[in-house]
Image 1: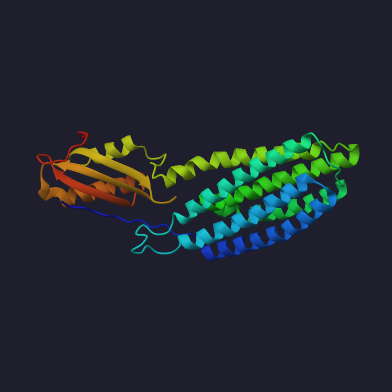
Image 2: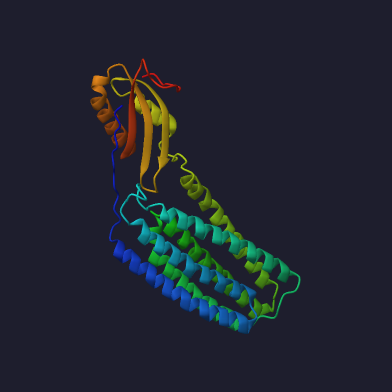
Length: 303
């Protein structure tokens, strides 16, 4: 029975420039982590130490994202016949899971200190948090463009956005400690940072899991794909339709098409492929053609 495979490839614009931005972002985050750890230990600020831990996770998340980005550009081979694009999705899952673990750890530590707020040196907190904010914003600017089109970079990007928000909150906390000696604000800020981290990670995680589980993309819907295939001239039924994402940019369809004239199979398959590409930008399809008298069992959709 005829099978047809179509391939559609997407290319990243200037990937080497993107790699350079990632390396720069890793460097500034590692320098900041060292400064924040030292400042947090000297000042006694949990929120500053928490921010340092999160900054270290930022640097590690960027390293993971960078490595996955490089791996994803490898061409398909006999081991990975669809290519290595899903390396970026795996990296996104790792980074988002790390964010959740960090968020839960900060909630635990912040809640414990609510009952015994420590002494905090406000000036050290404010100065280092201000430096951290500058670095966080620089990292955000280095990665924001790439984050728009990549789950992988977006997960690392969220680490840095959360840090930027955390730095603002730490500055507020340090200022209140300086002005009013309100030590309770330090663990409160820690809890706010943790909540923000968990909120963002929780929102990003379901689409990543869906893609790794070979779930159908949000668009197009299964009914739409079945309908378009069923409307192709010569197709009398459609069944065993499978729709999934190969990676973030490529979708794939597998389906059985029932026809009455096998001699027309190549033309019907060509028309079906063209319809999938034009309507849904689906460039990879595997279509099996069956005669209506010997079609395999499966719910058919009549044209």
